[in-house]
Image (cartoon, rainbow, N blue to C red; front, side, top):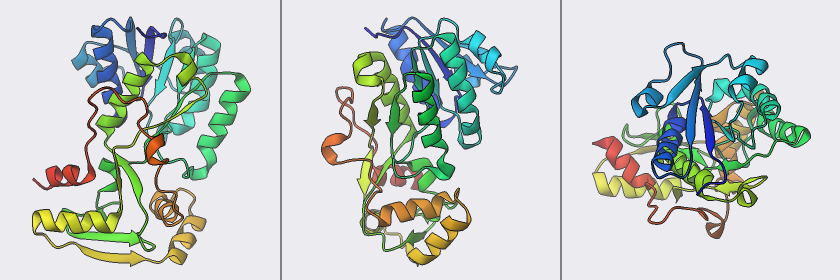
Length: 286
């Protein structure tokens, strides 16, 4: 049984849809009592509708309206995207006012990357107002990393590596992230959640080794180019939101993984079998 009985999810997109699916499973198993989804849309959230979950329209910038909607909610899970991160201080103040017991900020990334300093500022605010929170670090979303936009397009046959690319990094699918978060929130005690950081790792890869294995398995050639570290530093200095450069600099510094192997996946459900990077890429190539 969960110590928390009522859940609200805001920003049901990539990660949020799988958090929602996991919470629905927990509700069906009798672990929790209720789930609600907050959305900006008057039409409701389609994923929530599909799962039979109530949607409530709220203005993410209206603290009083959010606080009213949060009355009786134990846990608020924020899965807002990059453009919604600026709304989280308002969500935090509203959650505190409403008596929410635990807040999950949308910090699903790597510990060493904090574009613009927004995540560390939010954590400081949560401590200041006394709102219990849990951080989930997951590395890089596979669906975001293995893309032409990030210039890590193995199926497309072209990858640009920042720096030497000799160090590993953590990559995880949004499905594995969302289901793990839901499981942790509905099984762990408050003592293991409040003020804690939980590390979720789908795979730990060294990019050049992954490319070599991909070429071996598919028979396709992947052209590799390199962006020097100095260029990465110049790009990051000119734009603190340049995720590509910041990520490769983090990998170059040996901070691309979220923790030691014995520190990750400590609370994984029995039989948890996260998708490996090569399997993800091979499925993308089909």
